[in-house]
Length: 377
Ligand code: GLA
Image (cartoon, rainbow, N blue to C red; front, side, top):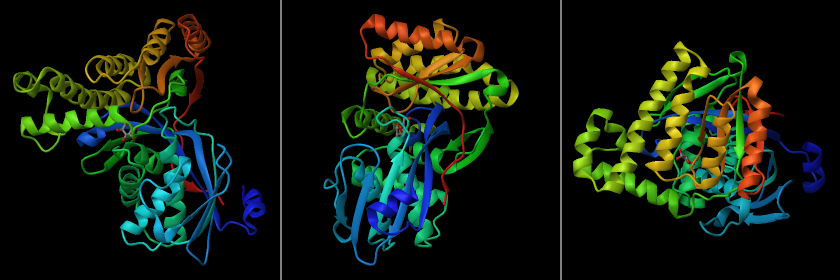
């Protein structure tokens, strides 16, 4: 990467940083409700080589896409002006400027093997690699919590996607062999051992190839329903509603808002149960909770789609111990926790089911919990 950088920009980079995508094991649409999530960093990463420039020019190139060399000026970054993947690095530069760090000119080369549009936080991986680089190069001294909030600001206010803090947290704070149990109210977290392999399991990702965007309407409208629910119930966030409050809530909320609220409340409860089970019984025991999470997203939060439902059903019927869609929904990927002995039959069954339904062939691959963002060179 350093050689490619030098041939494009005429000088060696000052360094190379990488940050992973993520899979969320459980805890969907709970982050912006100040609830609990349990994602892990995956062994697919974005990598960025960077060199600061003496002026305010920014030159960006990626090894993917067809966007060619793009230029911008650090002195005049504005929401809505950046195109394609350049929104993410430019959004980070913009967000750092907003919090008072005078980031200026840069040459930047980006590479990534996180599948894009697959619900695995490929954009956050880019943002987290870039912020790790700029934090270190400018000696800004941001800790991971500050970096999570700055990249969230880039997503919300520059890219225009009203997302929470889960993806950046997994990418910046994740650890090999562990899932990240994160309390999104105060960003406190704990790494929970999640060793599927030792339990004879493999975590399969089924990318349905149905692409989604969280800058579109569905994600924002679910978020608005949650805010409405919290307001009617008189709480700061849905985090403050417990399982025992649901019956009363059903009388206070319209039926749709109630279903949205019920998803968030039960999902928070499932995260806590999964964390408990991982500690006491191991990964094989969490299957039914993954299944229940999917049903809740399909029926109450209504963010699944026929391809995700089929992936989950086919995987389970072929021997997965549990399966659910992962990420924001409306497309993207499902995960299937599968006994190693059943891996081939699960893969084949999902492929067969997709072909039979006339869907585009899914991409199926295994992931393992991996290290968070780091400097490579
Ligand atoms: C996307 C967002 C996250 C989170 C999930 C749903 O991945 O970026 O903040 O809200 O959707 O759990």
